[in-house]
Length: 357
Image 1 (tube, one colour):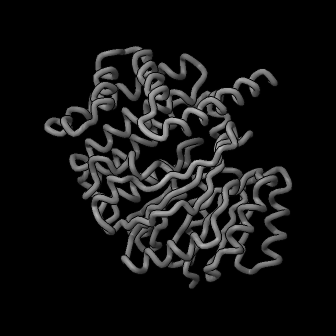
Image 2: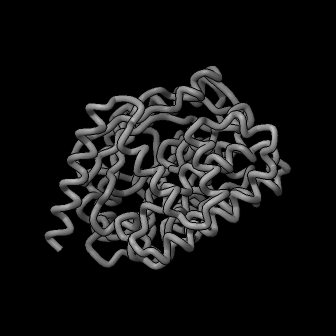
């Protein structure tokens, strides 16, 4: 069997797909298979995939009816024969040595999961920004379990599949999967993968290149898609799985941090006031419930986290929470000049984008 199965869910990305597939085919580790799941594309994506498959036997293409990225990833994972699994988005690309370094790390440490860094390419600013695994992780040593990092695991590991390199046996034994929801279908996989892992290792390099704010992407359309509750639906699925595993108490503070961090920030993705209020109400309801399980742990929250928790618990309106987010963005804790420049360019490009419309 191949050392690695790379699963690529594909839908109407003809413009970007070539760079993604070329970066995978040029990997220094060649013993891989690339499973491309065409999720009902209506542009030239399908023909482009077939062309790659005809030229390189490592590319395996499946065409199916549209069911969303979550279903496409599950479809590909079921057909993967590799020792390890990696999920790559079709509009992103990988550095040449990335898979080889991840494979070596995983074998060396007998890892269930390897967590690593990425470079964000912001379509609004055109400034790449490298991000690395949390310093909190590095303080735990070379190998640790999800439980060792329970209090901060979900925020620090990120809710993305593309910074996690997963052992196939572990993936199947723990019944990991992606949700079949329009957006945030990767949050359940991302959180449950690290929470259930007995051995997590770090690869302290940014080998994955993530394209942000791509026109036509699901995230680009979130402001007007009329489905504001996807994030909280995914979070609730994680909570239910941890409760099923008898781990809800263990991860209670981590779940709370995700709610008042990633969850509250997800409010900014929506333009409609009713959508924001609906999502905030659902987040607030869950905060009230999970906060009760964190008695004796709340002193581990940072000052800003405690302030946000207080706002959510006391204020039925999202205004206070949104104001806190705005103030934080104006006072970044580090790399101030770079972040200030990045923010200014993003703001200018957004302004020009909306003027053009």
